[in-house]
Image 1 (cartoon, one colour):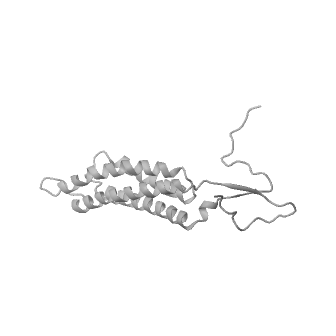
Image 2 (image 1 turned 30 degrees about the vertical axis):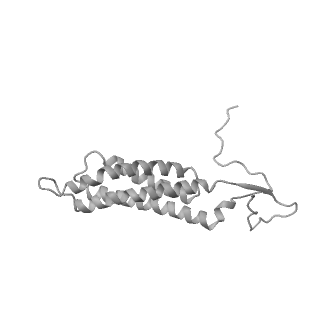
Image 3 (image 1 turned 90 degrees about the vertical axis):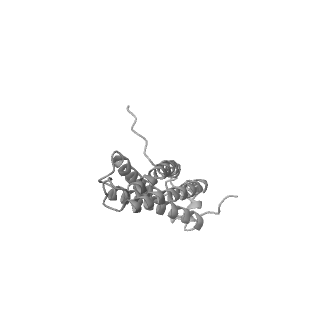
Amino acid sequence: MVMGLMAATPERQPGVIVTHPNRDRPVVQATRATVILLLLVSAALVAIVTIGGWSVLEGAIPVQIGYILVYLTLAFFAARWNRGVLPVSAALAVLLGIFALVAGPAWFNRDKAGFAEPAINSGLLGLLTLLIVPVQMLLVAFAMRGFQQGWNVELERRQPAGRTETYSDAPPHPA
C-alpha cells in the first residue's frame, strides 16, 4: 500500500479545542499589523523605484520584481499568523537594505549631463531608495519581535463530556 502525503494541518481529535493564547494580546496584534504594513510599504517603495527608473535600470529589474512579489506573499502569510515568514522577512530586509544603501547615492549621481533621464526625477528616486533603508531596519526589528512573541503557541484542552458547543474564551496563559 502506498502512503499518501500527510495533510498540511494535523488531524484534530474530537473533543479537543485548540487555542492560540498569544494571538489575542494587543501587543502581538500590533506587531503583526506593523510587520504587514512594513512589508507592504517596502513593496510599494521598491515598485515606485522600479517603475520610475525602468528606462535606466540595467540588470536589477528581475530582482526588484522578485522582491515585490515575495514581500507581498510574506505580507499575506503574516496576515494569516504564519510565524515562519518572520525570519525570512528579516533576512530579506537585511539584503534589500544593503542594496538600497549602495544604490541610493548612484541615483543622485545621475543628475549630471550625459545621463539618460528616468521617468521620475533621479533625486527623488535616490531619496526613495535611501528611504528603503530605515524601513528595512524597522522590518527587521519588528519581525524579530514578532518571532519572540510566539505566534505559533497552541494550547489544547478537552471539551467536557456532554457539551457540544465550543468555548468562547481562551484559556489563561501558562506562566
